[in-house]
Image (cartoon, rainbow over all chains, first blue to last red; front, side, top):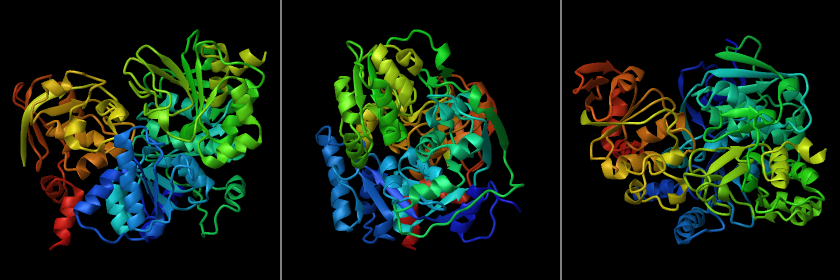
Length: 421
Length: 164
C-alpha cells in the first residue's frame, strides 16, 4: 500500500512496515520537549511517582521560554522546578536564559530536530518541526511525563490533507500569509486530528524559515501535524547543524489523502486574521481602516532572522507612529546577535521600536507587552483568541512581518506598499 | 460508572486561553487554576459551577495551546464530564490523561438546554437528558480507558499497573 510521508515516519517509529489512518501505534521518540509552563506539572508527577530514571536524558529538552526572564515570583519558582530537575538528571539539553530563546526557533536552529524524526513536545506549536520533514506534534504534561519514562508515545495515525500552491508569490507575501490563507479557507477545525501536507511550485521554492512559520500554525487549523517533504532546501538548512543520522521520507504517488486543495500563489495577498479566531482571515485590501496601539514582531511563528530583515526593510529611515508601541523580539540569542551584526537592531532603534530579549512574552499575554481593555495590536504571533495578549476586551490582529512593520509606521493596519510608495 | 449533573452550555471553539488564561499559568496548583476557570468567557462561571456539573460545548472544544492546566482547571472547579460536538486533539488527550471523561455527541449537544439534568453511563456511552426525557448514544470508552478515568488519570493508572 502506498503511504504518505507522515504514515511512513510513523511506521518506521512503530517498528512496522506499514500503517494506515486510524490505526493506533506506539512510537519510539527521537526527542521530547517541555517548557516552563508545561514541564513543572510533568516533573511533579514524576516526583510523586518516585521515578528515579529517565529513558534517555540526552533526548529530553527543557527550555524555560514562556515567562522568562522570570516575570514574577511564581514564574521564577516554575523555572526553578525545571532547573533542579535538569541538574539532578544531568540533562544535556537544558538551556538557561541567555543560551537559547524560544524553543521552536531554537531547536531547528541548533540542528536538534531532523528529517524523519518523531518528536513530541508539551507545547502545541511543536508541529513547527514538520517543516524539516519530521513528524512532530504537541501533547500535554502527562504525555510528556510518560514519554520521559518510556521514550514512547501512542498515536492514532492521522489522515492527511494535501495543500498545493502553484505559480509564484506576490511581493511581501510569505509563509505567514500562506498559512493564514489556508486556515481562512478550511477553518480552525478544518484539519482536526489530521496531518497537513504542503506541496507545489510555491512550496518547492519556499525558504526554510517560511516553511517553519507554516508548519508552526498547522495546530491553528486543528491539525495533529504539518509536514513538508525534505528537499534541497531542507538539506541546505540542516548542513553543519547536526552530526546525528537522519532519514528522508517522501509521500508515494497513490498515497491516500482525505482531501486535496489547490490554490494559486498569484491570488494570495498579504493576509490578516481578525479577532478573535485565526480563521477570520481577510486579504489586506479588504481590512479597511483599523487604528492600532501596539505592534509585536516576534514569536515561534515569525521571530526569525528573515522576519526581522523584512521588518527592517520597511522600518529603515522611518519612525513608529505617535502613541504606538513597536516591540520586536528576536526569537533566539543567535538571531539577536545576527540582527545586531547586520545592523537591523540599529534600524529598529532608530525607528523608535523596542527590542526585547528572546521570550514568548506577549504572545500569550505573559509579559513584555500586555494589552489593556480596548487596546488593539497587530502581531506576527499565532493566536488571537479573547484575552490572548492581555485584557479580555483587547484585540489581536495576526499578520506577517511586512504588514506588521508597515502598520507600526502608519498607526493603522497597512500594507507595505502604502509605506514604500 | 455513572455521572449525574447539571448542564452548563457553551458555543464552538472554546479555547484553552479562555478556559484558563495564560496570565494564571505561573502556577499549576489545581485549586488556584479552578478559581479562574472560564473567566474570560464567563466571569460568573466559577460562582455558578457546582460539583458534578457537565459542560456542554460545540465544535473544536479545547482548541489552542497544549496546557494541561485547562482540563485540570475544569476538573478542579467541579466539572464531572464534558460533552461536545468535537474536541481539539491535544485537549482530548489531556482530559483523558488526567481522568476527566469527555464525550463526542453532536445530537446531545444540539438538544441539551442550559440547566438540564443529565445522567451519563460511561461504560455504555448513554447520555440521558432527564429534563427533556431524551437519550443519546456516544461512543463508549474501551474498558482500559474507563479504568484509567476511574484511577484519576494515566500516570496513576500506569503506576498501579506497574506495581502489579
